[in-house]
Amino acid sequence: MAYTKRHDGRSFTECRPIEAKAGVIKNADGSAYFKIGKTWAYATVYGPRELYPRFQQDPTKGILRVTYNMMPFSGQGERVRPGPNRRAKEISMVSEKALSAVVDLDKFPNAVVDVFIDLPQTDAGSRAAGISAASIALADAGIIMRDMVAAVAVGRVDGSNLVDLDYTEEAHHEGEGAVDIPVAIIPSTDEIVLLQMDGVINKEDLKSALELARIAGKDIAKIQRDALKEKYGKEGEAQDNE
Amino acid sequence: MSRNAPNSKEHIVKALEADIRYDGRKKEEFRKIEIETDIAVTGEGSARVKVGDCEVIAGVKLSLGTPYPDSPDEGVLMVGCELIPMAHPSLESGPPSIDAIEIGRVIDRGIREGHCIDAKQLCVEPGEKVWIVSVDVVPLNHDGNLIDVGGLAAMAAIKATRFPVIEDGKVNYKELTDKKLEINETPIPVTVCKIGNQLFVDPTKVEEDAIEARITVTCLDDKRICSLQKGGSESFSIEQLGDAFDIASKTSNELRKNL
Image (tube, rainbow over all chains, first blue to last red; front, side):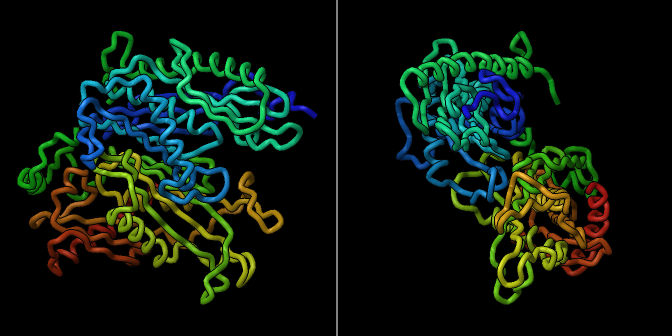
């Protein structure tokens, strides 16, 4: 039996409920959280600040450094051992490349902008949620960006293309199984800045999955902008929240 | 704000002598406490505690493992703290710092030595299979006093913990039973700080950076003390310690009411 109806009743093009908020961590220069279903990502930005160790400094421009971290109690199964593992390091790296495509750090030689993505709770799609949170946090920190980066996972579960897979869908083994495709997009130009895939798919289905990501990216970008507007108001002036 | 506040020791001592701290509190007054439980559904228990601007999440994971040979019918408890760099500009990625290790161990000692959790209830099959209770304390925004705030968060998360279902000898994390982790005691750590001759509780980060010594006293429901940790590079007199014990037992009673 093909996957014709999603287990949580969503339509194939529907993301789980999303909630985003900017300015949630007081100590940080910029911060946000991005919740999509049960996946919950915090992003905090510190910097531009001087980069140590010194040999990593670039005298021509500042660098962006992203650190992805799942909290020990955030996994679907057993406790996640704290500290960076191979998976976390790779996700940090691809997230860093995705966000580097929009930030302009030319005016900050030798400096680093640190982005920390920390997840208290996950239900698949965590790298996408992390990147979506990080864009809001970077904008909140006043880092010059040419656009936001909106990220979402799309995929194919036993014959049906769909957006925003949760863990149950990602682990679907019956029939053709599941294909998971995290995508990050610059919404104003439709440039793809992160693309990964696990699973087997044909070219046509892959192209239509990417189209789903392009459309979902627009909705996510709006939610990101709204989160910033909520903090800064329509005129771009900071609301006095506290 | 906190990073630019006047933070010289002299200023802080003056404020303490007048018994009006920068935020208007008295020496033995805690900041406003907010506790929310079941905030992370992937944990079998979880809580978020805010004390002023200091915000900490704690989560409990239960897993099945083998008991220690010297206590075959008892489960295992571990409490850890992750000082992740999101919480303060001074924190860095990498292996746990000595500060993180101390916070985790002091909270752990209070819960363990206070016999908070009856280890026998964690036995599934004597000598073969027991529950391992892992409590992780993660500050989101560090504004001082992480042992006390983390200790409160750990207790709130433990109190909210329910056992998952065991199926064919394995844990099914998708289903929680109604069975709660049973608590015998609610140990609450209170750290009393010292600058000059002044004793006070619940330091902000700015105050904490200026203290000379601190003593963490973990008190039980009936005011008995179940663990101590002295920190900082200066000393306490015996009289000061007596005062600190009084302050801690009074404060822990107040804090316990929030759980």
